[in-house]
Length: 102
Image (cartoon, rainbow, N blue to C red):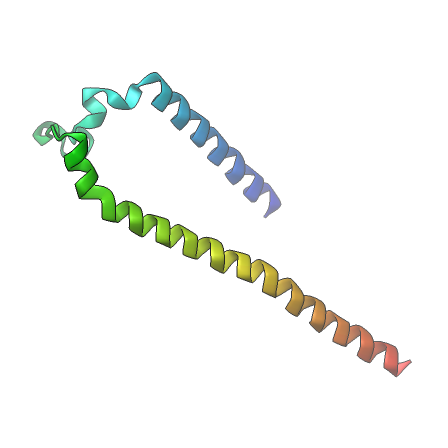
């Protein structure tokens, strides 16, 4: 399991570095990447919208993703804080009960 986790972390790191390099070099600004050719093949199209129009279209998606990611952070933080306490309390009860038997 540890090997799988390390391999997944390594692949994720490589993916993020490649994405950053491709974005920095402008690879995603080509006509191929801006079009829907990947999805629709020869029936693809290129979207010619300005930044203001695009901002109005995706603003609520960004807000939703921000709220969702904050929710995940808070739930994960709560679980990381709460679960070890429960585990420690459970082990303390076992240790106390086993020490009382002797």
